[in-house]
Amino acid sequence: MSGHFKPVASWRFYLLLGIMGLVAAGLAGFVVWLNLFEHDFLKQQGDVRTLRVEPITAHRGMITDRNGEVLAISTPVVTLWINPQDFPKTADAVRQLAQAAGLSPVNLAQRLKRYVNHEFMYLRRQMTPDEADAVLALGLPGVHARDEFKRYYPPGEVATHLVGFTNLDDQGQEGLELAYNDYLSGEPGQRRVLKDLKGRIVRQLAVLKPAEPGGDLALSLDMRLQYLAYRELKAAVQQHHADAGSAVILDAKSGEVLAMVNQPAYNPNNRAHMDPESLRNRAMLDLLEPGSTVKPITVAAALMSGEYTPDTIVDTRPGYMRIGGHTVRDVVDHGVLTVTRVITKSSNIGVAKMAMALPEDAVWGLFSQLGMGRATGTGFPGESVGHLPPNTLVDRAVMAYGYGLSVTPLQLAQAYTPLADHGQLHAVSLLRQDKPQSHQVIPPKIAREVLEMMETVTQKGGSGTRARIPGYRVAGKTGTTHKVGSTGQYTSEYRAFFAGIAPVSDPRLIAVVVVDNPRGRQYYGGEVAAPVFSRLMGGALRMLNVPPDNLKTLPQKDLPTGSLPQDVKVAE
Image (cartoon, rainbow, N blue to C red; front, side, top):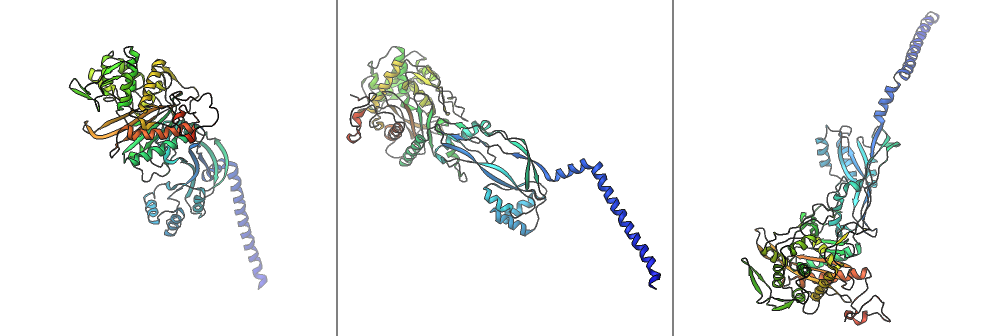
């Protein structure tokens, strides 16, 4: 019986073996055919599934102060994103991902539902590399990572109004970050990478285009002076329960801005609860009537006309006068004054009479030459240009003592540069300068005479005695103006000013302090702003090692021992 079935079994075996051989030969032939005729197509399809061209984020340039201290820097972070079409729709996967990423599972599920037909959705931006690695370690399909940078501001709120900030995409939104965004941003690059089926980068294959980092920006700021000015201004605004304040310090020899601070301020590293009012760089955006701080400029115009000298007599009696239906008043009747005493006593009548006696364009023309009514040219976004009134008799008289025109605190500081540097008007700069730009607008002799007149303001009998600095000769001018309300009428609120220069023997610094709406019994510039000027200017001179020029005013314990250096002068 067994011999009868053996041929049949052998036949079936060989048939099956033949079929398998044919299949194997067919498969081998198909593989050969694919390699010979479909190689390029298959390679392309494989590359599509595994090779990707990824952007290389360009490193944003640093912003530093004039001494190299970092004000803004970009640090590496990771942004996670999801392809909702690849992500598993299970509640357990959503819960795991939300817990690892520090998100709400309910909110994440709702977002995935909204983006179900999309291929891209941000999971969480600007995570630390360690945080992102913890999420990627879950190995969930559709979760991807992208390298980015996050901007960090080491000085926080101290320099924020000038530096500004960037958004999540590292693009400038305010301040110099916005003004120099293209320069700081650089050029992104490209790289080809190999990814696995879960979208994770296995290895980098080639750099197609290297990223070009952004340029670094060196500001004119000296952060030692910036911290000092910020501290003093903030303390004054709090002490007087004021609405706001600004302070600017310029280098009298170059026009560089060494410090610029404002109140209120904000922390650019945490903008979750930022008040829009705190965004304003008031020193460059707010337009203010400067009040008596411009009287030295009016006097300079009078001296330049040749009709006046520091000793010319001006009759201010009876302390008021009418001009075209407008009444000009002094606080008290100062009687007969010399031009110098007009500055010392801050007489509105005195400067108004001089302005009206001068040629029509004398005062208006000098104000214009000093930059009032136009932007300073710093390139700061939205910088205000100010306003000069029409050159009528009444406007000329009112403008002479600081009403009817508007300037920014920075414009006022710039207008003082000729008084501090032999009549040279300096172009102000927010960047460190190797070759300052300036031109002559006031004769050196007249600039010196006006500076010495301004020194009497801080001496006995002047309105700015609280601006004195032990060891230094100080020239300056107080100012107190009524604020203009929403109806265009003057209100019962005030702004307190002090603008000054030190040391008088060889001016090094110019500072302007503004305190907006101080509340309480003290609201005059000599009471509110002058003490702030004294503290910040005194500290700045010492930080910059500027030698004292008035040792008689130093306390005995602070006097140096031994012989004095040759460049130190003792005021008589």
